[in-house]
Image 1 (spheres, one colour):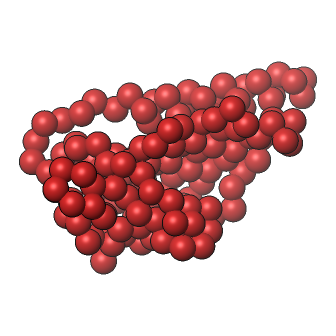
Image 2 (cartoon, rainbow, N blue to C red):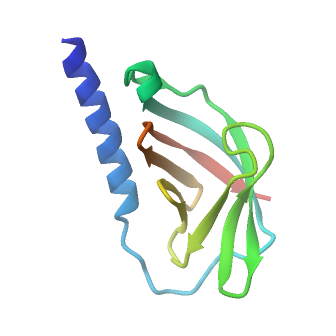
Amino acid sequence: MTIMIKHLSITALTCSALLALINPVNAEEWRWSVGEVYYCESESGAFAQDKSDWKFTRWTPMKFRFKIDGYGDYKNIKFGEGGYFDGFYLDIAKASSYLKGSSLGFTFLLNRERFKFTEINADGVAMMTGTCDKF
């Protein structure tokens, strides 16, 4: 029974991550500007890691901020200091109906005030969702 729960949890996390990664790109006007700052708070999330024998663990809610950074056509999401995203950068893919930042194995989507984050690598999988406000 425990093995079945472990496999179902990993499958659910993987499916959530894949759904977040396949959102269609829309070719409308770009709505985000360099210098904008967002304050976010997670509502739910979970992860499983090799070092914990792939035990499904819920994330403790967290607060973080990020800023739109860059120049010209090159823009990125620059996370603030402290916490899980400490100083992390994600390259922005140009999409109009949502903001999408990604890097090898990481994806962060912001659609209106709702964010979705996924991480997939050889040592673990993770997902998180919550809300962000622009200041």
